[in-house]
Length: 417
Image (cartoon, rainbow, N blue to C red):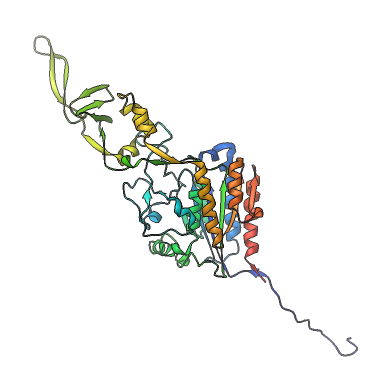
């Protein structure tokens, strides 16, 4: 062809593959219940979750990818900044969880102006005192929701701080994870942006469902199955208790029929310890001899009546029943067994199904991971996933492979032709 004077030939073609300019919103919903301490599960989860974050953020424009981390156990600690944007009852401020009613799980949104019941701050698990060690609503480091972040260091630090304790509430974790993807949460995000708690680049999120530009993803992981969610009985949620506490002397007094029981001396008195006097007797030396003398002394400290929220923040249900009310033969029944109710596993499985359906109905893609989970937990997680191929049943180090595969799938979904 060169001999014929044709030096070049053009081959017109069009086509390209590149990272989409579209956005991604991810809720990483992670189990931090007590069983995650078994077989080094939490130790294996952390690097897997960090690698997931790394992969999702890699080569992404700073304002295109937001990741929320939602740790869950018996309850979900929304954190004060986030929960303050909603309307809740105000019995206490020790912790920041809410008891969703059943109907909430059939919705993908969460109304700001409808009052929700704040979860009572109490410990049904242990014998602990001053303070309680395992509140139903966790307050430990790493238990709080981290909403909408694109900061690798912030996300890594939050994952590294995770610690495990308590029961398993997949339904509550999934509810919060879905809420943080719902466009009805946009005003909450704007308020948090105004407080410099979320980067301003995410103002205007969550995006509308099916806007053609935004992928909404839930990655739900559990090593267990739904277990009991505990709720304090209404009569014990607020108001004054019959327990007084003397902080200086670290002594309790319990009112019963106009008398006060002092657990520390197993006796009854006419006042709480610290609000009266006592007779102190002993030998005193005079100029010529020793005399046995009794003198009135003021009891150290001051006894203050505790409200129920103050009492339960200081003593677990079991500790209170065993020690403060040891004078009563029915103490365990009254102050432990009858002090709380619970939502059982069967009801929580149904709630999980409903909130997963609500998310998928809005176009949210749900990946789920059963990490050495029992059969019932596997069934719930597999049903929650967008399809059987969106569910991962893993053991041991396979947890990292699952997160890697999910991250790769998300990146493929972002590719445009």
